[in-house]
Amino acid sequence: MIDVLLGLQWGDEGKGKIVDFLCDKYDVVARFQGGPNAGHSLKINGQSFVLNTIPSGIFREHCINIIGNGVVVDPLKLKAEIEKVAAAGANVFANLYISKKAHLILPTHLLLDAASEKAKGDAKIGSTLRGITPTYQDKTGRSGLRLGDIFSPNFKTKYAELAGKHLQMIDFLSGDTDLAKLEPAWFEAVEFLKQLKFIDSEYYVNDLLVQGKKILAEGAQGSMLDIDFGTYPFVTSSNTTSAGACTGLGVAPSRIRKVYGVFKAYCTRVGSGPFPTELDNEIGELIRKKGHEFGATTGRPRRTGWLDLPALRYAIMLNGVTDLMMTKADVLCGFDTVGVCNEYNLKGSITSQLPYDLCEDGLSPKTTDMPGWDETLYIANGYDNAPDTFKSYVKYIEAETELPVSLISTGPEREKTFLR
Ligand code: IMP
Image 1: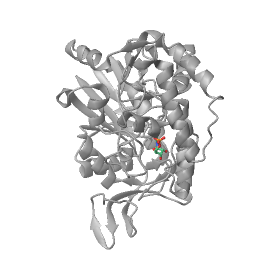
Image 2: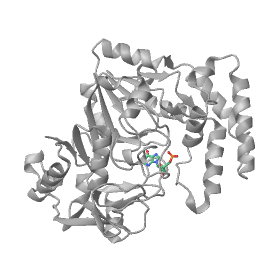
Image 3: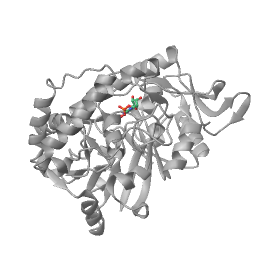
Image 4: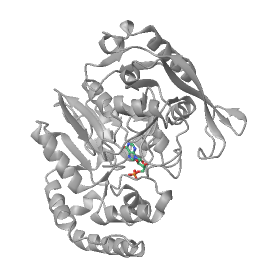
C-alpha cells in the first residue's frame, strides 16, 4: 500500500521531520514532484540537514528512497546533496533510486528562471530561482531532457539544441547568457550521477506494491502552491496535491490508503502572492523569530500569519486527507491569545470558501481569538500533559475540519512528537 504525506499550506510545514519520524513504519520513501526548490529539514543526533531532492528516508538504513518521474533534478545540486548525506553516514549509493523519466534541470533553466523573474518586475512570483518553472515548461512543451537521456550517445547534441533555444529566449529577456561559467561543473555532475541506480520507476514502484512493501510518498511545497488549485499565478509548477503522487510515481489512485496532511499551528508563505491572514506587524515578527521562519532553501524571511481554516479545509478536500498532523505548536507558546481565521469577509459577504482570486480587493479574514498556552507545552510529556488551552485549540481545529489531529510536533527533534 501507499500512503501520501503532503503540506496543506504554502510549503515549509515541517514535512521532512514528520517523514523521518514515520519512516520506521515504511520500507520506501518516494518523492513525486518538485525539485531543489524544496528544503526538507531534519535533525538527527543533534545535526541539522536540509534535503532538497533526496527523499527524507535516506538516513534510515532499511529504507529505499526513490526520486520519482514527477521530480525535476539539477545534477549539480543532487551531487552536492549526495556528498553531504554520504559524509554523514547515509548509505546513499545503496538506498537511492532515480526514475529515468525524471526531467533534468539544465544550467540554462536557471538563467531562464532568473531572466523571466526579472522581466516580470513588481509582478514577480518570488521563485526560488532553481529553474523549476522553465524545466516543467519544457516537459509539457515536449522538448525537455530526462535523466535517462544522459546515457544516450546523442546526449550532448540534444543538450546543445535545447540550451541554444534557451539562450535565444534569455537574450530576448535581456538576461545573463554566460553559460561558460556553469557548464563544466554541470557536466561533471552528470557523470557523477551515472553511478546511481536508474530505474523504470513506475514498474519498480508497482512491483514493490505487489511484494507488499509499504511506501510513503513525500510531497514537496504545499497544496496552496499547487499549479491548478493554489493561489495562481503565485504557485509552483507542479501538482503538489495527492493527485500528483499518482502521476509523479505511476501509481493508480486506488492504491492510495492514507493521506497525511501536515500543517503548521499558524501559517507562513515565502515569495509573493495572496496571504489573507498575514500579520504584517510585531506579532508576525515575533512568530518569524520564534519559529526561525527563514527559507530552508533560499534563507529568505517567511511571511507569517494566523491559521487559515478556509484554506486548510480547501486543501483537506482536494487531497482527501485522512489524518491531520500539526507542527510547530511550540512556536505559539507564551502568546496571550492565538488567532484563527474561520471565514472570510468578501466585499461585505461572509464566505468560508476560497474565492477564485484571493487577491481580490475587499477580502479580509474573520479571526477569532482563542486563549494561548504557556511554556509548559515544552516539557509536557505527551499530549495528555499539554496545557488545557492548547488542547482546546486542537479540539477546535478537529471540530472545524472534521478530522483527527493524529500527530503534533513541538520541536525539530524526533523526540518532540506527540502521537494521539
Ligand atoms: P518556484 O517553485 O521556485 O518556481 O517558486 C514558486 C513559488 O513557490 C515561490 O513563491 C516560492 O517561494 C514558492 N516555493 C517553491 N518551493 C517552495 C518550498 O519548498 N517551500 C515554500 N515555498 C516554496
